[in-house]
Length: 209
Image (cartoon, rainbow, N blue to C red; front, top):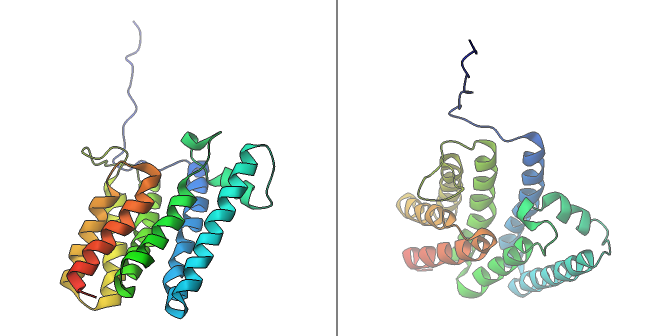
């Protein structure tokens, strides 16, 4: 008589493998650097825009050289470590949309709304990805590849940042909910555009600043 097959139990919490977390940590450490932009813009908005534009252009040139087989010091290595499986052998678009998303926020919205938008991009999206990678279940069934842990992290980060900037808890809750909803959209690297622009729009309308 053959022994019965025992199915492995599925844990409520599924933790990512260390190698996956390493790539996500490197990717989001770079992602979080965008949080410096509001401070730079408070000193000189044109300088902040120039630095973002120059950094984005430098990355585009470096990535093109990498795809042609040329190694750009530090940049190419970080890109390879931080790239996802779907990016292998392709132009890694994330840093480009990250820079453009921050620039659009500065161009479209007043300083407070722009800061909220950029912090949502840096901390809301960044922490959502880390939490979602670390704790993979439960998932949100209406949003492919999104987890409850990631959404809660996004909401908490945007709520805390907006509340601190504005001192208006009710508005902070609405803005955090909007950012969390936008983060759920299955648009891959283009969330770096949609999340800050959409969050900034809601913030500008609510705060009237």
